[in-house]
Amino acid sequence: MFRFGGGLILLILFLLPWNSLQAQTSDEESREVEAVIISIERDQILDGERQVEFEARIEEGKRVHVDTSEGYIQGVHYRLKPGTRVILQLVPSSTGETTAFLVDVVRRPAMIWIVIMFALCTVLIGWVRGGLSLIGLGITLAALFGGIFPAILAGAPAVPVTILGSIFILAINMHLSHGFNHRTLVAFASTVAGLFLAFVTAEGFTWLSNLSGLASEESTLLYWLTDGPRDPVGILLAAMILGAVGVLDDIAITQSETVAELYDVNPRLSTRELFTRAMRVGRHHIASTVNTLVLAYVGVSMPLFLLFLGTPGVSTGHFLNTEGIAEEIVRTLSGTTALILTVPIATWFAALAIHRKPKKRLDSDLSVR
Image (tube, rainbow, N blue to C red; front, side, top):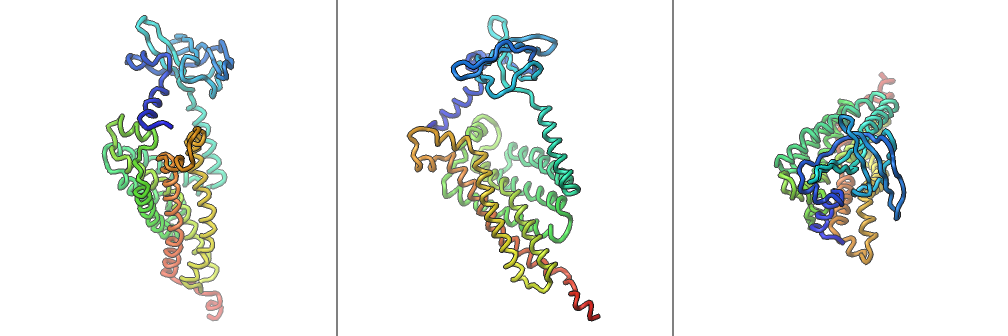
């Protein structure tokens, strides 16, 4: 199993075409350009690996020849055909010749269509609420990429910035998606409480498991190769908190709506009775959401799990003790624990708050009058 230093070096090597490693590290004039494939000259499987040679046209009609076997991309995962737009790395040599390597394919048009289809499905099925949720999604992305991330990169402490940014996102999105009403306000207060629970569980579990925050290559690169944040544990905690925000929103809204519906059916129910009955729904929600969260986290980290499980000679104890695996377990369980604790809090807040509203007159009272 690779140590982090060796893994970092291998990652850097992996990101560069093998046969041009020296040229690319020493020549600062190498650049990436977009090109369109004109013709496929060879497309075959050799020794289990796909090798593709093609002619591509770059700026001003200049043509270049590309052989995927010369770089780290073998063309296995890309559909390459005439007309496909690709990203090439042009590396000039000391002789004045330029070698082109396949880096990636251009997928922006496809991504635009995917976003359009997602938006259409959201609006056609969700109607007004769906449209408002899309606006909320835009606000979330603006807050993340325009506020939280730049602030952290500028040196601000990751955890406070993430908590404050999450509260801002929740305050806007919850009321935008669910309406500016008493129920949403109670759910928002419950979610903020759950947000601080997520911080406490993430902080506690991270401390108990003695995590460094440098389990992934991305975290290591961020720590060593940029002028950005120098607190990997803080970044890890911020990621855990941010990952729990959306689920806390869902559970708080569900419990608030459940209490409200129970009260609408029977206004005579006391706070304790409302809490007890709504918690029956909440327990079912916990059971389903816990499983959903675990599957979501495992799905994101599936390559990591497969890598370690597929490494010969790795015992189960060593596998679970590895920081990369431990980090994913802590991430999953801290968020899930915060979720579980938020259910009774959200239910109790909603049950208390609904009795502070003006009570509905019963039909029987109205008929007497």
